[in-house]
Image (cartoon, rainbow, N blue to C red; front, side):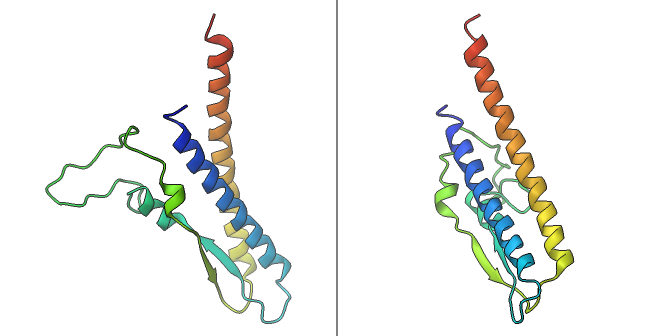
Length: 135
């Protein structure tokens, strides 16, 4: 558990931020007819990648050209990412774009469901180890 706890905490934090994004999209859609309402969004992916020392494609960044590309070492990961990055709230245009909000909602739902599946499989595996490990 000591090895996987930082990953679980990070996944939980990302899921919380995606839930917050979903709530913002719902608020934007609820105010689609409100005059002078400015839609809001939440951005955290870039800061998360920076906190995890990764580039935009999920690869670890190189700080020196002479260095070999680093391979992820789970023993060196301390799970500090959830403490380092903070979401950024952005106020958009003066009107809500229904297509943009629906696309954001669909993408966010897919990402959230994927993380839910990953967490479910992790805990299913832990449960299997506990129940069948002594056999």
